[in-house]
Image (cartoon, rainbow, N blue to C red):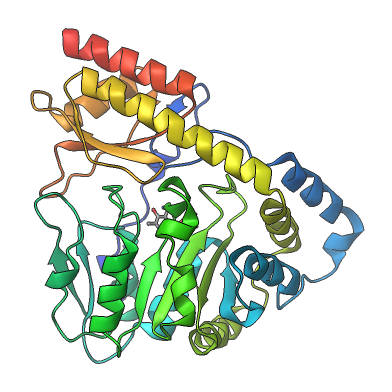
Amino acid sequence: MSRFWSNTVRSLTPYVPGEQPKLDNLVKLNTNENPYGPSLRVIEAIRAATGDGLRLYPDPNADRLKAAIADNFGIAPQQVFVGNGSDEVLALTFLALLKHDKPILFPDITYSFYPVYCALFDIDYSTVALNDAFEIEVADYRQSNGGIIFPNPNAPTGCLLGLDAIERLLKNHPDSVVVVDEAYIDFGGPYEKIGAIPLIAKYPNLLVVQTLSKSRALAGLRVGFATGHAGLIEALERVKNSFNSYPLDRLAQAGAIAAFEDRDYFEKTRAAVITSRETMVSGLHGLGFEVLPSGANFIFARHPQHDAAALAARLRERSIIVRHFKLPRIEQFLRITVGTDAQCEVLVGVLREIAAG
Ligand code: PMP
């Protein structure tokens, strides 16, 4: 603490470094990383981009990457914005599109960074409680607002909101920007059935944010993107360019393009994660856990007899790390990332031992 700190800085809590411990041999199931590495084509592309090329600035428009993303979703490159991880894309979204004279709305129980961005950028917000099943209830978003944001699937609950409900929300709030944060959407089912990007053609107020950190296993490369009407994208570009006109470094641009090119690897690994999730859920059900329906690469579970904080601590003693949030309504839950089948087996085995004794 220093006397030079503003009230905003005083109010901020730094990211818990404990979630990224510098230890080997952990079963790391706490930050929703993909247990499978990225495609080998990504590694090759990054290798090819090193060397003399690093002397040169990267493409300030990330044209090839935007074209690859646009191609993947059947949209125009002008409808794509890219940034350093979706956290940066979200931060710029708050600044460029969600700062108005009315409070923005997001669910009570959601991604913990939303209130942080509100504090940083001096944006008012109101929260809307999840329903009894821990789902987003679109009908409860009644208030006139400066914008709406939610993850789909929601985090940390993992619950997926249907496209029909998202369309109802867009229709009910035509004057608000509605941001759907699809960090985990690829684990929820076929994108054609659940993804919101196809709706951007119909709703100029819709922004859909995605990341390459989860289903494309590139959390270390820091690549995220947003898609929406060209007018929304231009607002993001203006704000971004005022900070740093290079959206992504050379290696990130090269790797991300390759990640979109290797469609087979993407399909294979996301299917593997979904299958492991189902195995993990049945293992946990067998131990008496209640598990919320998950469309993500993590599950949210509680045990009627065991305290969640104590369980997390016992798991940590055994080198397994999961996430526990000390927050009202969810403090009896654990959020557990879906690892490889072997990791999930270790987790269920250790939980069985803990429960037995
Ligand atoms: N949105 C949600 C809902 C998340 O859980 C995360 C990951 N913590 C992010 C965005 C940010 O991911 P990244 O910055 O790695 O793209």
